[in-house]
Amino acid sequence: MKQTLLIIMTLLSFLGFCTKARAITVNKVAPQFWWAGMKNPELQIMLYGDRIASADVTLSSKDVTVKEIVRQDNPNYLLLYVDLSEAAPQHFDIILRQGKKTTAVPYELKARTRKGEDIQGFTSSDVLYLIMPDRFANGNPDNDIVEGMKECKVDRSDSFARHGGDLKGVADHLDYISDLGVTAIWLNPIQENDMENGSYHGYAITDYYQIDRRFGSNEEFKNLVEKAHQSDLKVVMDMIFNHCGSENYLFKDKPSKDWFNFKSEYVQTSFKTASVMDIHASDYERKIATDGWFTQVMPDFNQRNRHVARYLIQSSIWWIEYAGINGIRQDTHPYADYDFMSEWCKEVLDEYPHFNIVGETWLNSNVLVSYWQKDSKLAAPRNSNLPTVMDFPLTDLMNKAFDEETTDWANGLYRLYDYQTQDLVYANPMNLLVFLDNHDTSRFSRTEEMAKNLTRYKQALTFLLTTRGIPQIITVRKS
Image (cartoon, rainbow, N blue to C red; front, side, top):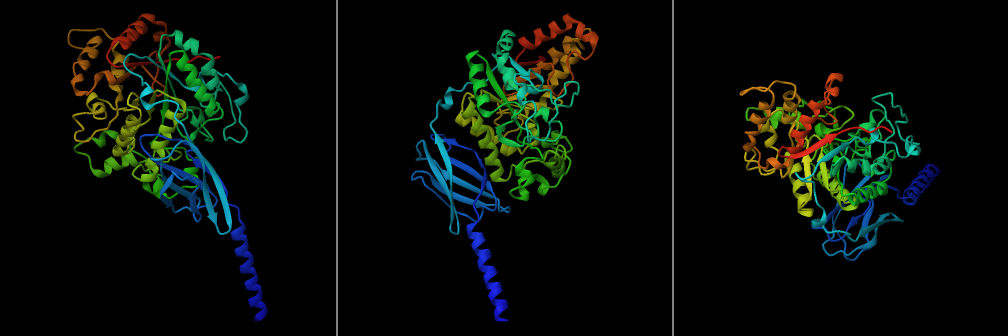
């Protein structure tokens, strides 16, 4: 009996030693760094590593203070909320202690190189040029296949495969873009999209702080923005807050089930976002539209979780401050939580008052679209704080008007006149993104016959470029 107890005690002692001796491994820190002097002094720092939640946390800085330490259901996460109101630019350590083991995680608060007021957003004086980077130009064939990434196929004969376009391809053709007469480029998503299939489009993000390596690096994107600015071109970044990709570490090893809607279980959205403003809709109709998932591989974020909200808001501000972008196009805007999106817009515009955000508001009437614009009387007393909305109803009309005979009271150009007489529903008609087509729609020239009809195309472009709002065009360069 004594021998058995001795063996048990020896094993327990050994296990205790192993526990104390085990290294504290931090795999990710988000955001990687931040800036001193931001208007909002609170910063969420997410630490992700092997069972780090049990660690005690201190900071080596004297003027960065910990407001809150949040441990999630998953022991692999630590969320730190720190106060930067008295902090100067500096390097400091986040010190993690588990037993006798101590790990120092280096962190940097950078000095701001520009004031928030210096960043100028896109306006009705601009023309946006929409680029899907993978489909534009392949400037660096060496990054077509990146070892360790899940999709390793480049095939320009396959419309669903990657074609090899990248940031260098865009940078190499800025003169071509500028010669078109446009003044801003809108890039479809360029953040990491490490999915097994269909990753070319970018709308299933797997890391919100990382440029997809098949496009280039974070530094290359920053340099592209600087080079674009030198050519008097603004840059608009595509972002997605409604959902992420199922290969995102936040979903694969989720902090807690309530980071995603329906307790992280797949439930299909109805896609009927008009229910959000439908006075006859039931609560469940609204819930299934906004909380349901686009697809099983696009988990739907629960932005009512304050930690999710802070993570997403900070990710956008990080890219604005880091790269100096001029605008954001927010994908599937009405599918996310209204109050969260309103707060996000407000925080961004508080920090960067001349910035612009356009939300994808794919709805079938001007009344429904107008509900989502900042200061809409239809949404009052709620306010989306979203400066610019997308005029999808006008797109539908333009795709009919130039193929019909115009009469005094119907068809053809009368459709466009009649529609714009209703612009009083908009809080700001000049802040409407107007377009003939984009990456989600059929092309304006849908048939070979239409493509040959240059008069039709010139008429449409003339209207697009001279009507109220912010015009956006799209084309593809293959090289």
